[in-house]
Image (cartoon, rainbow, N blue to C red; front, top):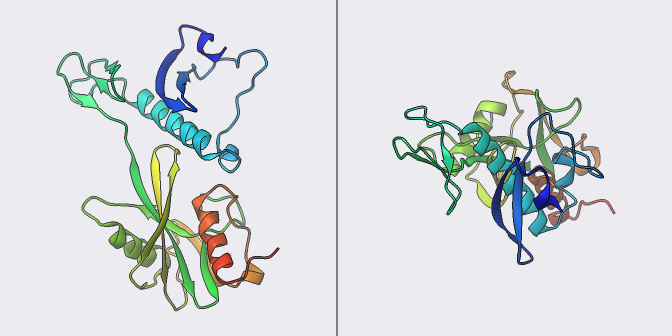
Length: 231
């Protein structure tokens, strides 16, 4: 029974699933997996879990990262303690409360007629191309972020974007907000984050992100809406 594993491991109830409590159990980084279990990377799981389990996994991963990064008060340095009533850590010395961090970021599908713009970020695996993405800066609206990131990363002026969908992205604490827009012209990669970018048609797409990511959804959605999805 997971709730009985290693009683000294830190645990926190993070919600419910099918009317049953969901527990986050934080193991030491060098801990061995309980008998009959193995540690796995959560990225490959994103495309294979149902909505309830996926949300629970993302929440657990984000809370685990936040919890380990906020063990000490950011104001006075005192060791913080868990708030048993909500997701927060409290400083017993100065009373400061720390809440889980969520970093908003946008990802945008840029099209030009029958073509879609895809870019290779230097952090991607070799040969993988995706949609332009970036974090929201202080004081920006999401729409401003979309237009700024497109201009900065591929040198294009785009039309006003339209919101489509979102995805929790627990690496470590992002909320990806998906948009679509259109633009034209030859993309000019910034050479810092983006090393290559180009316009692609449905029949010559490069290697694109795996299923379960909002990037893949944006691309597949474009293909479906235009009757271009290969069966």
